[in-house]
Image 1: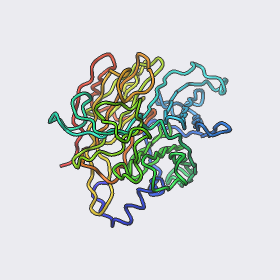
Image 2 (image 1 turned 180 degrees about the vertical axis):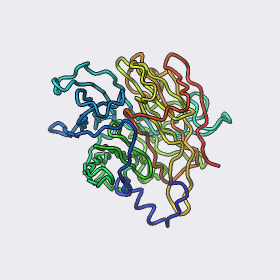
Image 3 (image 1 turned 90 degrees about the horizontal axis):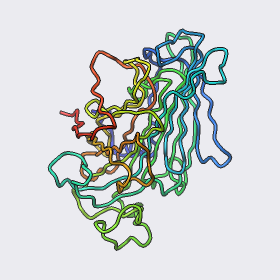
Image 4 (image 1 turned 90 degrees about the vertical axis):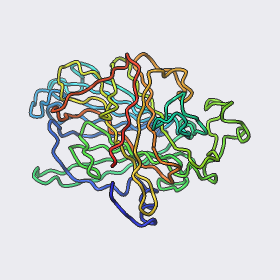
Length: 381
């Protein structure tokens, strides 16, 4: 989106309905396999589940033409707290409905809180315990709903159509999927074969998540939790006050906290290359199990700036003021900071799942067994 100059009215419209502005086209990704997608939920739509089973072959191992082995990927998104659960299993052709090896890899990604902070330690981005927190909004207090749609596109050179599914998730308090009063919205994209969405590649084993933060600094929409109107931010926490409303500081910035965790797979983060990497036990070094994120976010308004995204991580998860559940041994807490004073809107998000990646460069894996250090993610200039 860098370099786009659109009039304010058009940009505002696009940001209100973040799922309608996507340009989708078919592409080729090494090792990507064609999948059949099944969508399910429960009676009350408290979650949606996307099961993507390969027609033949597997992503891990790059066996795209092996008709004796299949794999299946499962994504489950909770409408209570936005937790995304991912798992990966392999099948033999004679046991297509029963995993041959069980679930081999799994992890969860859960955004927890929008944080308003002031830079006070002369380091770009939010550093927990160092920069001054002046406000927040917990993301697990709304309860969410979703709409879903499917788009079919013709993939040139393959004589096949590709189905892309998108789920627009928004608070239950919003009247529709394009409600302008939703402070936080998310869109999840899935595909049966590799596509490009706004020039970002998406494999059939991945989901692209697009988050929108809007109206945080508008007191008409972002109001304190009842009973927290006159409480000092320095003397309370998100457990007691889920929302503080915006502060009165004109130079404050926003960050998004998210927990990554797994039941039994260790993983690391490579902040310099914007990656989450589950440890691959099969020796396929060119397979990324985990996810990536962009070092830039977009904003709104005429000649809107591209916002640098600065990410820090910590192993101190349980007991952190922006974590509201207990997590096991394999867990990390990420802070994605948007390095711009009080933007009207922020559009950004990670891509999660499994994909074959270019192995020409060396990975620098920072495991969860160490304290994570901070690297500035800024590709501008």
